[in-house]
Length: 367
Ligand SMILES: Cc1ncc(COP(=O)(O)O)c(C=O)c1O
Image (cartoon, rainbow, N blue to C red; front, side, top):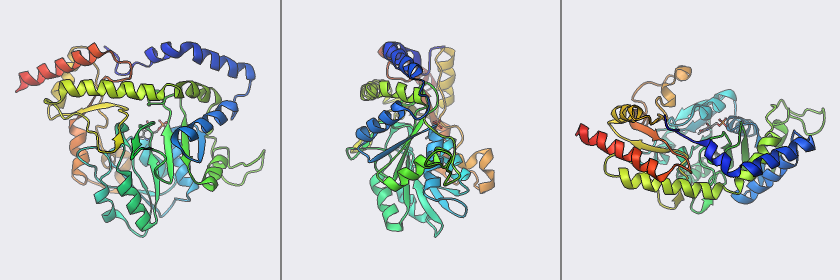
C-alpha cells in the first residue's frame, strides 16, 4: 500500500534540527513547562496575532479547558456541527453541557450559520464552529449571531493551523481558539499536543492555572484542574516545524490544486470560499460512487479514508441525546459520499496524477 500520509519524508527533511533540539532539551533536564513551551507560546501569539497562548496536552484538552474556563457546564447548551471529529462533542459532554447540533453547508461542510439562530435557547452559552479539513467556517456570520445573543465563540481550529478568514488567522477570530498538534495536523508534533489562544488575559490566566492542577503556585490549588501541560520536547519539535508551516501549507494548496485539475469534472472537489485561505488538512472528494472509487483504489494499493462515516448525532455514544436519522440531512449525505485521498505536503505530483487517473478510469467504466 502507498502511504495515506507520509510523516517520515517531512521528518527526514528536518531531522538534524529536530535531533539537535531534542538533545538540547535532554541536556537541560527541564522537561515540564520549560523554555520551549514559553517560547512556542510567544511564537504562536505572534503568528496568530493574539494576546495570549497557552500550551496544553492535546486538542481535546484545549476544547475541554476552554469550556471549563468559561464556566460552561451542567444545564448549558453548546451549539456545534454534527460533521466533526468526536473530540469536539466529547469536550462539551465532559464539562456536563449539552451539545446542540446544526446542519452543515453543502459547499464547505462547515456549520451553516443561517441555521444557528433557530437552535438558540435561554440555555445556549456558546457556539463551537469547526474549520473542517482546513476550510474556515464563516466567522463573520457566526460572530455576528454570537454578539447578538451574548454567546461565547470557541473555534475548533484543530485542522486549520495557518488558515485565514478575511485575512485573519483562524483561532484568533472568536473568543477562544483551540488547536491540536496531533502528528498529522498541519502543524503536528511527534506525540500529542495542543494550544489555546485568546485575546482575553484573565481567561488565559485561568486556563494556565487549570492546565496545571488548578495551581497558580507550588502546592496551592485554587481550582480543580487537570494535568494538561504541553510537553517540553513536543514544544521544541513544534518550534522547529513552525518555521516551515507556511511552506507546508502552500505545498498542500499546490497539491490540492493539482488534484482539482485532474478530478474537477468527475467528482465534487473541496470548495474554497471568498476571502479565505484553505489549508487542506485533508483532501476530500465527494461522489455518489464513493464505494466503487474506494474499492478500485484499494485494488491498486492506494489507501483512502472516510472522514467521517457517521455524523455525531448518530454516534452510538450519543444516543442519549435523542437524535435520529434525517435530523441533519446534509451531514448525513456528505458522510455517505465523502472520501479522503492520500494527501500530505510532500506527496509526489506523479502520485497525485496516478491516483486521479485511476479514479477517472473507474468512473468512466461506471458510466
Ligand atoms: C476537529 C477536531 N477537533 C478536536 C480534535 C482533537 O485533537 P487531539 O487529537 O489533539 O486531542 C481533533 C483531532 O483529531 C480534530 O480533528
